[in-house]
Length: 354
Image 1 (tube, rainbow, N blue to C red):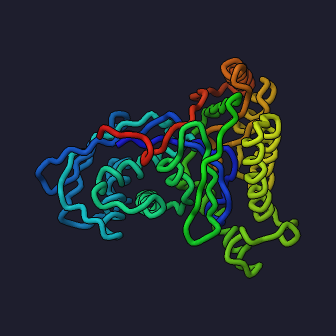
Image 2 (image 1 turned 90 degrees about the horizontal axis):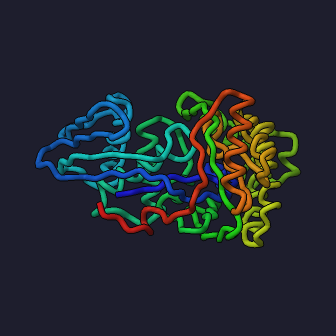
Image 3 (image 1 turned 135 degrees about the vertical axis):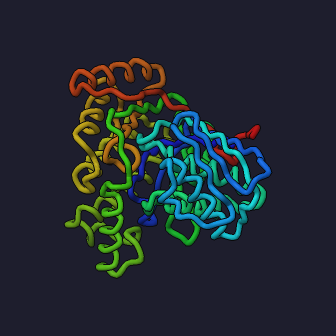
């Protein structure tokens, strides 16, 4: 079972506020192959990470005490499947491999959780939203971080050559594909400093948003108006970011790369100044992309490190990427993975051999 990573073009820290997001599935993959072993144990090995995990199926286990640490995702997935009525009682050997960069804000953890959920529960799985929620539960059990649902949905249901606008306002998320301009390229570059949501201020930001909504008498900040949140930077980011997602969809559909870039820069400024999840490295990398000729750039994912996403003309993409990474390296001494991202089908769209 192969599951892509994702990059978010617009809409960060909005999914858990019942807002709007615009991510796309990208051509970096987490693959999990499950082979029955005839034992009452799930045995897991990773091609990239050290250690082997053996998880007995005849007893319950707190996923957060499993070693090696990466295997907590396996234990968390087993626990989540069982809690939602999907029995895991047949032993398998799991072979795990991933090209989604870890700690980059490109959904390496969510891709793994979704791949494990599909591999361990594939004969009894529900629809996309329920499956996404199940995989999210697995990830929360594994890490203790109360994430949103954007990543799981897009890596399952994303479509080639499109982004996916997802609306979390109702009881169940709804989505539709948005065609990307054929003359636009999506560039991704790592700032050289990995981020982890566990131990970061991610949970604090979520709690702040929930508290503000409660103070306003609202179910979520999706219902807030600019007039009511103008003087609160956290809530102001959520309200303006939702508006930027709507504008970004319009710009994509109009093929307006310049406008897409402007919106990215506005979003980054809001994430930096109002939501305070950027870092000096991310700010410098955004500036490097703009100086190199990108129409715009922003941090992608939750922030606190990881990657920047930029938009540029297709025929200038490689040159802009090379110049931006060179400028950033010269300014900071840092360098990480960088690539021109391709939009791909999600796991439930793309064919799988495993």
